Image (tube, rainbow, N blue to C red; front, side):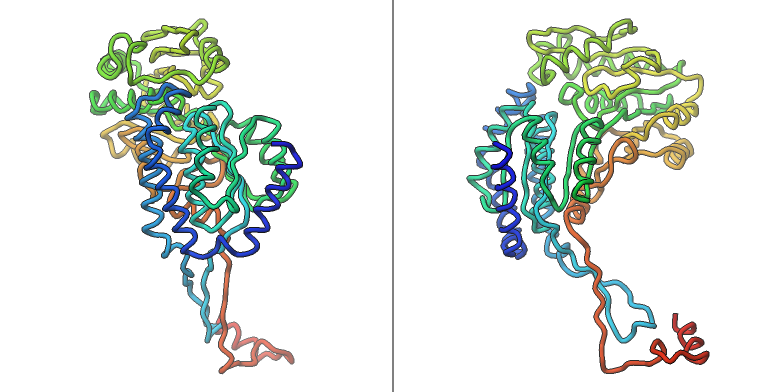
Length: 458
């Protein structure tokens, strides 16, 4: 889409929003129901597109994308009437008789820039929140997942209000032009470098942003954990989508004495999940493109590979790979891996894991496997992360009552459930006063007596 066309299209959305069509609760619910209908009727096409883009298994795609969105829409429809209602707050004595409340209102036309690793979910989950809040939206799917992008561009106009929603396909040129337009809010999911570009562009219009950026999410494993369950949950959360998940455990920290047992347990679970030759597994994904495949191969240069390491550039297959004690200065430990490589860092004592995590940028997620409540509390109180999951991986994403978002370098802002509704809303402060009673203490002429009375009621 040419730059002039993008500007004109965004303006048309703004005009439609200004006319008030998106504000009624009935319209919001109807659009959400249409989105649910799209997912139900197009499930097989969606699953095929995800397999074409990322080699995703059907069950994995359903769990992390299709089913996830269906649950999100159901939850939103169930609670939307409550979320849109005024939220009463207390009124101080000095303002009595009166009442105070917060009135949620939409912010206008919003821009949602999706990511390629979960190209369906990461574009439409924010859209669910934007619709719920009563906004128009421009959707920019990732060009790196072309099958899903093309499908979304075809399907969404067939189900949703075309005057309220626009899908813009393309790459850097189209995204750059979109970022020149004024929006009520921008939500971007992706890497830190582009996140900075988005934030700089948003600053030109003083547009608020939500940035979901990822980072290196640590996984602390204590030797007192339930080893078999821990290994199963780490393997599931690390190698889902071939490791291309922003909240996947990026590296493990464990005690040196426990490392051999943990490595063997991880190997057993890899074999159990994907077979002794994961290249033949129908349940194991592929790397998104040749550039990212080469990036991941480069990470392995000079590393101590203790499991996996097999690669096939023709099919973009990289086996589940475990690397032991890489240098902390290596790209493997300096950059978000976003692939099927799991480094294991060993320490003499598990307590050292806390300082190791704190010496690095704040992660999007932190995982802890332990049966020790004291260690659990020390990690919770002495580290910072967007989300923490104890004795499992990524399962906090399944709870719509928990917000999802980063902190520091891993992002800003949050969504999911009511948190998403609030992100795409302005909570307007309202006070309503009665006129039947009006004390004159605040009015001139001032006096010591009036001041004393004001201090008493304040």
